Structures are given as structure tokens and as C-alpha cells.
Length: 381
Ligand code: HPA
Ligand code: ZN
Image 1: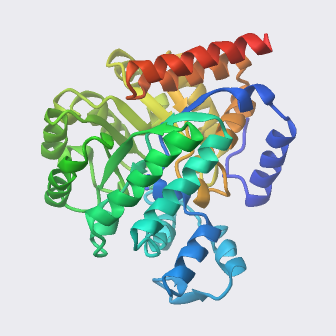
Image 2: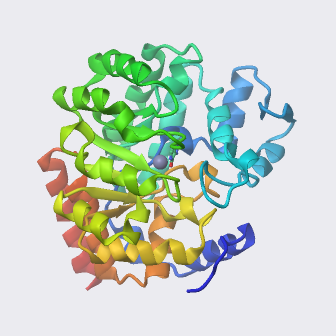
């Protein structure tokens, strides 16, 4: 590969058509585990429109005052999202574009029913892709700062979680992320407020704008979270200014001895010592190719994924923010990884096993998924 620019929307759409036309029944049939999906990033334009109507709200882009008068206008706006903050190709004014769209979306989440509908919409998608277990992220500070109560937020998420397990056979635990562009004190307050909901929450992560916000700023809250029994993970977004240093912190010092997973972090592939550190310390990685294809050249994505995978790091594939990434869900991310990395069916099985091994589900849930996986593999061999 020698594409030195990120590819256009039309090119990404052509790739999407291509991977879907491959009609890959093996990848479709695999029982899946998804470990990196932001529940707020699954807010599709149509669901956002429905919730806005129900809550009597007008939709638009807050900063510019642009109003979307129709669902079609809202849908078209999702195609204009340019990039992530801090990336070297960005112009300063583009820096918040993804986050602007993402956080503007939060506004329609007001009632318990809204949170339920959001989560249920994801679980329905998950079930249709044979996801058996997932650990979706949620961003409580993005809701409490708008005046939403914990009872509203957690009540809706919990009802959906229980119903998904019962009706769709999708099991889940939530991963609560702190917003790294907010203060460590706010993170600590939210950790304490979350303690009554610990039966729903299995892990703690760190997301949002990484620019000048190293994980070390949050050391006290991560250590406390670990002492409270939560698992730890942390975003290291692609192409960030201090990404290698952030990856090093996550792999070796976060929470005292390093987190258990890194979300994204593919720049580690540029530094053999970081690859070795991640491997030696046993961290898993969650890689979301479609999220990077919007702003990274292809040859800065897939060869790096290959390096991490070939080094024996337990890499898993996930979807990040499917509604903001051209409606690209777990299946699309798996298929594009397969195509671009020349992964075989055995590799796809391995990636699935990796997700099982690095997830935080109880052993019986893991062994049920592995049993089903073996049956699927046998049926295709
Ligand atoms: N990175 C950082 N923050 C986020 C992301 C992400 O991928 N998605 C939603 N919030
Ligand atoms: Zn993410």
C-alpha cells in the first residue's frame, strides 16, 4: 500500500460495498465480543431525530447555530465530520469536529426512556451481528453536566441491559469512562457516585480530547478504581501529539502497574520497545479500523494492526462510534480488517478468541462463547 492521504468518503463507501459483497458467512457467523463501543456513539441520526421530536427539541450544530430542519439534513451533517482532535493533519478549527458532533448528540438524552432506547438500539444491532457479550463505554460526566441524574441514566441503561440479556441473548457489563478534558476531581466524584451501580459496571476507561491530557493526570482516580475492584482501560487516540508517552503510561504505570487494555493505541507499532512492553505486560488492545480510515492513510493503519497482531498482542476488533463513522458497526470493522490485512479465517477466529480472552466476563460466559466458536469453526471446515 502506498496511499499517503486519508481516503475520501466515496472511496470508503466503495470499500464498504466491496466487503459486504464478499458475503463472508464465516465472519458473520462468528460469536462476537465487542469491547470498544461508546454507547453515545451509537446514536444514529434517525434515533437522534426521534428523541429530539419526543423531547420537543430543535437539532443543530451548537457552535455555528446551524439548525437541521429535516432528518435528511441531520443525516447529511454526519458526513461532514472531519477528524479527531490533535491529529497532525488537522487545521486548528477542525480540532473539535468529531467531539462537537458527538457531544451535541448527548443533548437529546434526557429521560430514562431515552437512555433505554439508545442502549436497546445498540443491543439490537449487536444481536444481529451475533455479538454475545459486550462492555460498552458510557460517559457519565457528559450527562451529569447537563443536569441528568444518575438514576435517569443508569435506570435506562440497566433496563436495556437486562432486556438484551433476556430477549436477545446479548450479555453485557458497562465500562464507565472519565472525560480527560474535565478535571481529575470531577472524575473522582463520578467514581464515588458510581459505586452504588457497581453490579452494572465492570471497568473504568478514559476518553475524550487527549490533547495535553496524559493518563498520569488521573493516576489517583485510576488507583482508587482499581482498589475498588474495577478493571482498567484507557484510550490512546491515533496520531496524538504525545501518543507514545501516553501508551507507555497506560502499559506500565496507570493504576500502579499499568492498565489491562489500551483502546486504539496503534502508534505503538512504530516503536518496537512499546510493542514489547505491551506484550510483556499482557495488555489487550481494542482496534477500530473504520474510526481511523476517516483521517489516516490506509498504510498508516493496517500495517500497524498487522505488526501488533503478529507480535502476539491480544488484539481485538471493535467499532468505537458506529453512528459517526458512516454507519460502520463491528461486522464492518472486522471485514475491513480482514480485507486490508489479508487475514485468513483462522486469523478472524484468533481475533475473536483474543476478544474473549481480554474481556472481563465471568469464566462461564467466556467458555460458552468459546464452545459456540468451536462449533462455528467446525461447521466451516
Ligand atoms: N476517543 C476519545 N474519545 C472518544 C472516542 C474516541 O475514540 N469516542 C468517543 N469519545
Ligand atoms: Zn473510543
